[in-house]
Image (cartoon, rainbow, N blue to C red):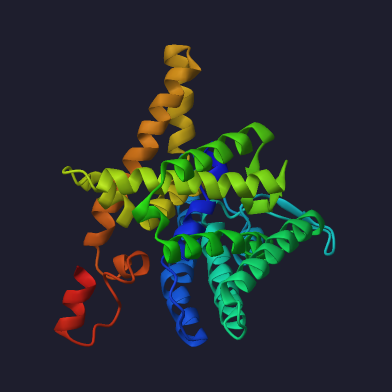
Length: 326
């Protein structure tokens, strides 16, 4: 159920918040908010491995420099063999999502601008988005493109759905029938098999797409209802705002450090139960991302790489600083 929506919902929310901009602004904002954290994370992982493994090899992973640079530039979420160049590209990890969204933002903006030139703009936008999604699934069967370009094409139907939901105010108005339909599609997609968006694979692409849309819509509706209650869920608000830095430092922990596996093995040896070790390792991973959300915003310069909106490198005046701090 998680894999059915855990990536698509971010593209759907981007579509929900979409506003047409000039291409120069789209690229500028995407570079600042997506590529800057991506390459910062990649650089930190590489630096920690390169330096740290020589001093504490039992606690920090080794690095193959050339292989790592290739995987960082290619930006895939899963190890993939590229037949055209006869090379296996190692996965960079969960942050493949950042360059993929960079591409996805640009493609959707282009589709939106093109569709606006015609009378039935929204219908045409939907057709463009569905066609690009089909193309993404077909391409992924042949080759894994750099920056998960095929996944970015698949995401176009999610951008479009989020945009349409906003235009029709479906989240705010809410209808029980739509909520149930979303939940039903989500369950059906789970029954149909897995959806690995990072490699553009689904056991049933149509049901996977419908399930991603339905499940994300259902989650958005539940969150909307929660936020209307008297209790304003400050924990959810904080972790929502800090989700990017949490993703990046979760990946740093996974890829650079061997602390997690050592804790896991130690707990299995002591308790004799793998279930206990799983609970402990999840708590450890959660502690790492919680700590990063507290510490990183307090470190000058470093925080600007992961909170570029809140802590820009250059602030023109005190008013803009105040706006970025809100």
